[in-house]
Image 1 (cartoon, rainbow over the protein chains, first blue to last red):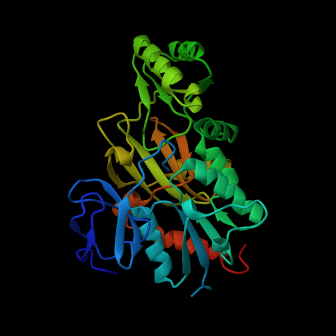
Image 2: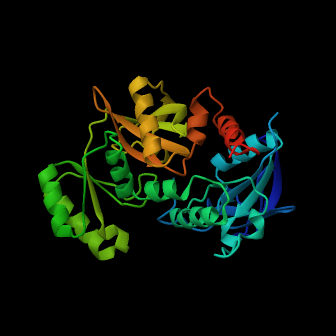
Image 3: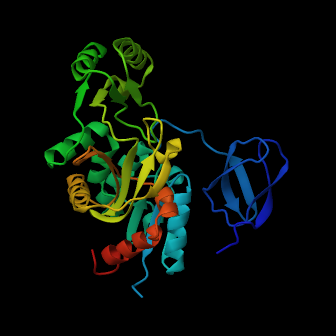
Length: 62
Length: 289
């Protein structure tokens, strides 16, 4: 298992700045931007590419 | 070592729960296929290529509407899916959920449904205050209202009737249960508990998603019986059964079909995702279906 503290650099799609993200992220995973706090979706992992995540919808849940 | 499974994980967002499940499946060398439902086309004639040769699909869609359609399509294609379309249908809607529990003889809070705000007001007046208004579709404690007075009831019903989606015009009203500041979440596989936790809060809502404190909970014989009956009532599968303590018994207020288990996995000794994989191996390996 990847060490949780291991990170790689990716580009924040909102600000264009470089941010650290966990190295073991999966496509489809959501991370919080350390700059804006916005939810970002991992859309590719080689290299790690991020997009703004879809907003929460009313029928989401368990 | 059991036979390797090809498991299709249907998702639109990988939560911590899905990540735990993916890790547990990969650790046992199962072939895991992540299928982003946003990118798939569902033909009534034939399954999408992504479904080819999967032994079992696991519906982990966050969206209830997607879940309802995907489970139905999977069954039409003849592909096993966890959970079944029937289970998704019953659990997705709180009124269906309540009816299934009642019909199975599982104690569940007194509940009535009305279709107009005037009739909804009659219900709350007869229930007395406080009582609880819930959206028939929804989760994580969102849009739940504890109604403390007639004035509050009138305002809430007016807002829902005017501003809401048509589903908000179905008024699902439930008695307020004095649950001692906590409820119980059980993750169960075909009615067999994997583990349970209590969720405690000073707030009347005790959802983990609302920040409730969680701790492991040991189920007694009565709770075990009710979990099994509640699971059977909705068609079984991988479920989250929610109970409240009522003093000398329990009441089951909900069964969740797309259960989140990360909070439970964090507080119990049991390895929850590993148990899920055990169950998949037992039920979906070649010759087990």
